Picture 1 (tube, rainbow, N blue to C red):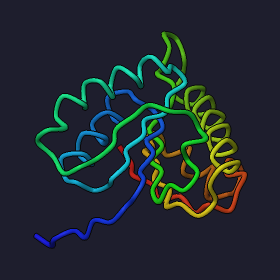
Picture 2: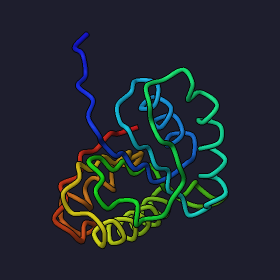
Picture 3: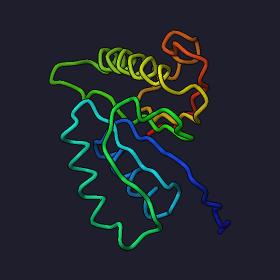
Picture 4: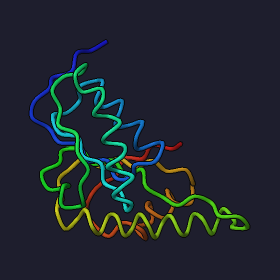
Length: 150
């Protein structure tokens, strides 16, 4: 395995559900950053995940883990977007994809206010979102997202 070079670095994870929390945990135990910030529309959820992660801090490389808002994107080297809606009873996959495209558009608009040079990763569960971004319909800014299809 190739060794990683760590310097002062900031990673922001937007969405503190199962995927966001798992990515935060992996980043923390691998020592991938010196600042790890979780952002969620439900601030209490993000704070709870941070408290859980904090229990492991004595066993990992030095890292500051905290919950925050979109302003935390300022100065981030990496931003990971895992936020999205769950499928509601009776909702079609197409309707869910449309809702998630709107959520992503909103998130990207918020990120753009604070950071324009970060590496942006997105976890995407629906192919239609990829098509929407490829056609430029959902991306309001110049950030070039990297997609991780789950």
